[in-house]
Amino acid sequence: MLTRSLCSFAVLALFAGSAVAQDIPAKLVPPQESLLIGKYAAKGVQIYVCGAKGGANEWGFKAPEAELIDAQGRWFAKHYAGPTWEAPDGSKIVGKILASEPAPKADAISWLLLSTESSGSGVLAGAHFVQRVNTSGGVGPTGACPRPGTERRVGYTADYIFYK
Image (cartoon, rainbow, N blue to C red; front, side, top):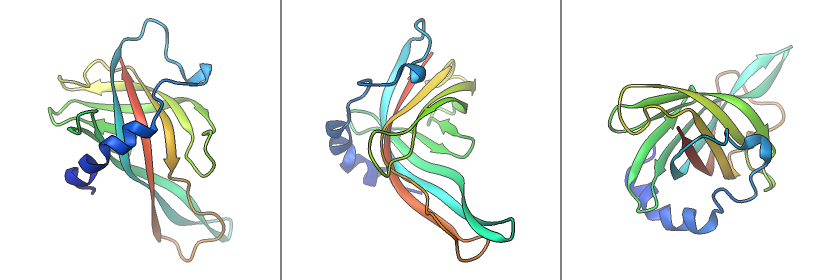
């Protein structure tokens, strides 16, 4: 797991290089009545695992692992399999992909719009949509992989925007 201090020192670089809510494709925009909860920079990894498919070993996506920080460098939430976002207050959301668009940058994971279901009370309670935009890195390995069960962790950054 990434440490909070590792993420904190990078917050200025992440936000300085991002263009949150700029040039977002129409299919990735939540309904007009949605209210912004917040925008957060993420730094972490996309985890890929080698699996046997049709007599060959291939890479497949397993899960994300990232920490989200706010514009002041404070830790906001952790992001992991599900996809799930969990805040320190115990509130949690689990997302389902509604739309995907290739990232404008080469070798970057796609941009997404996800619907969510929340649990608990707190900062994420009532969140209904998440956008993943301004991605960099995270693309999985290509070609055959060595043996089933082998994992590769590929670094990525993104901006996550939460809406009620």
